[in-house]
Length: 137
Image (cartoon, rainbow, N blue to C red; front, side, top):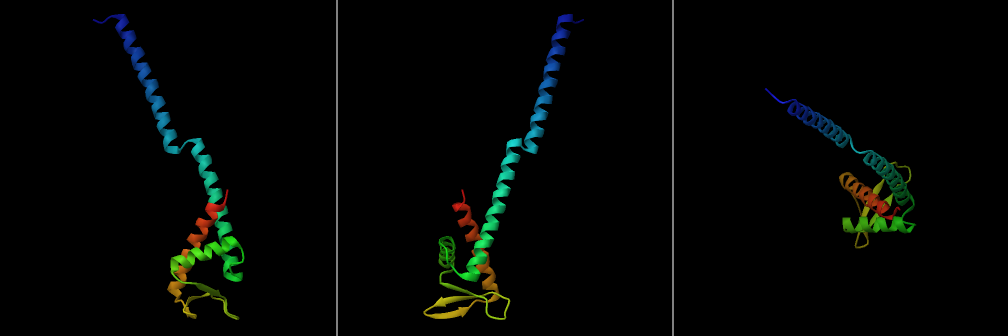
């Protein structure tokens, strides 16, 4: 029928194939779950992103309340105005809670509509995030 050596070789080959299949399955599970280094890197990036957002929020608050008194806030406001295409004035009128934004053109101020205010604030957030992200070590 068959030789004893042939059966032995077949069993060894089959055993190696099983071990290889288990190793490949293990590697695929790790790849789907992400390498430990990827997890550490993702945690670091999440912490950094959180810090960037916190700093950007603080800069925006200062910019809206006190104006562009520091260089980073000034650069953010300049980039925002470049994107909007006109100088902007931010005001919290006395006894009102809502921020008002005015576009300055030819010496006159034009109040932005609520929709325009939302667009400007969205752009301000993106500009601030970019600026803080590029200046943070």
